[in-house]
Each structure stands twice: as structure tokens, then as C-alpha cells.
Length: 122
Length: 111
Image (cartoon, rainbow over all chains, first blue to last red; front, side, top):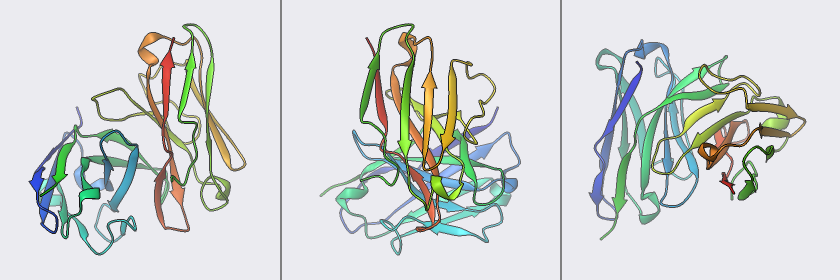
């Protein structure tokens, strides 16, 4: 069964940094794009960043551009989100999701992890 | 404010039919990009419900159906059940960003 497991969340001060990880299993990791989606407390889903299967295409939401960096290690079936200059408004549950594609950029998210909570507060 | 517009809340009695709308623009739904739908029950991760406008993944009951026309899409749920009480989100691609976008979500209450 496909599994995605996020880790790395926690409490960080404004201006601080944090790196999230997502471990994939039971599928050919290097064949799928991967995405981070976040959900602030009591709010809706917000797309954060997407990386193609071979890392050749990378996209960011304007809200995180220049502060967050997405990367992946296909040899280790892992996805990462490096977050710098964190703000209170970055407080959210961060989900990693596998991209199911009918042809780039027609991506939908067929499997999701359980999420990891990032809290930015002094 | 979300790029895709959904009604914040809807409700229906058991057995009834409800339709949730998702309105976009000429840079996303109206540009021909697919619309996908997700269901999120409280405390859980989202689950894909409909993909490619109208396709159901294995295991999703046929009470759920999707459609798209012009710059809008809809998710219909027939024979409403208590377990359908959840938040529903539409999603597409927006060429002006560029990137992927979600609707603001619709909280469905089963009366």
C-alpha cells in the first residue's frame, strides 16, 4: 500500500528555519511528481510547492517563493521542504502528496501523508 | 481569497442530493484544465474523490460524480449519508501563477 510519512514539524521562532521530510514507500518514487500542501488552523488547503519526478520542474506559491526550497532524493525515496525566514502565517499542517499526472501540468494528488504541524511563534 | 470559488457551507438531509460548485477563470478551469475534488473529514488528511473532471478512483461510491462546463465545475452527491459530512475542495492548475490552486472549501453538513 502506498504510504507517505512526513516528519520534521515543530515549534520555531519567527525568522527561524525548519526542514520537513516525507518518506515514500510501496511505489516507484522516481516516477511521480511530489507536492507540499499546507493547511492553517481552521482554514482551507493551500498549494505550497511541486517538484517533478526528476527535479527538472520546480514551482512555488508566491507566499513562500524565495523562502522555501523543495528538493527530493530519489535514491532514498524522500521529499524535503527547507523553510527559511519563517513567519507566523506559515503556521500550518504540512502535507506531502503524490502527483498523479495525465500529462504535465495536469496533476492531481492521489495519495497524501498524515501531515506534520509547523508552529511559528515566539 | 482563493483563486477557485466555492460556497463556504451547504447542508442536506439524509437521502437528498447536493451539488457543490467551483467557479474559476479563463486562466484555470476556463483554459481547459482538469478539475479534481477532495474530501476531508475532521482530523484527517484529504482524500481524492474525483479526478479529471468526472473520474472516480477505485473505492469511491458512485453516489459521487463530477462535471465541468466553461469556467465552472460541480461535485454532486446523491443519496446523502451521515458519513458524507466533511469539507470538500476543488483543485485545478492555473497558468497565470503558474501553479496549482484549491478552492476555499465547502463544509457539508448532513442534517
